[in-house]
Image (cartoon, rainbow, N blue to C red; front, side):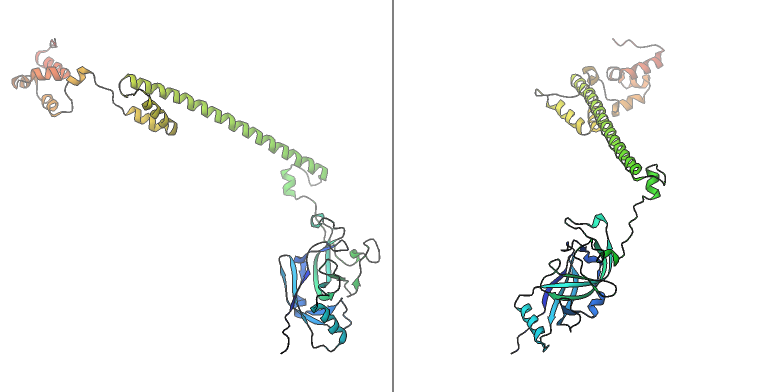
Length: 338
């Protein structure tokens, strides 16, 4: 039975710093054309036939990944020798060949330890099996004519990467909108902009300090006003206790309950206290109820009818104001009430 040979997964490229001080941004690598012809070379040697192909070429989590499919049927002994070393784990690296480069010297793209350009856009030309990769995942750069660029020294004028790439221009001029906010003209220098931003920050911090102080002062005023109103309400509760409208106990818990209610809802506390009736005096309790049926019957009689019905004395004792009014209407003078 033939041995089942599965594709071997490889990490092709990431965005870490390369041994030559450069880095390649994986998100800017175009893999679409390579997916149509995914040849596998050995150490970028495109003068010899491929030793296999790549499948499942993809980008995941900032990496370019691919699965190696080796050409086990190739009769070439050297190809089989390479394949054997791959299978036995002696060749574990691959290297990407990149072309159509665009790079940037933008400091925002620079990682710690990076001394060269950041390749922001390029096209994946080929992927090779290799003994040692340039960023532990491998890399080879090609110029526009397909010639390999062996960049070992950035200062070598014959090998400068800038000869083969397009460095994007970075616009550093501040927009008119923000210049207007800073009250600056279009000709403002970087130093003027920096000072204006510093002043804006200083003004912001000062405004925040004033706002914090104002809030503190307002809270203090609110607390003083609330304390004063609470003291006034406490006096009203004391007066209600003295007037007999509130029956206080020895512990003083009734007054405490009113004050607790005031702290939660002042209006509700005032309404509850105001609703308590004033206790009637002994004299008032002896007098009749003006809302009673008896009162209404006497009110409908004149003095003569009331006297004839034997209710004059009743009216005098229970409803003295009514009695005085009816007596005076009958006799033209106030009655003696003693």
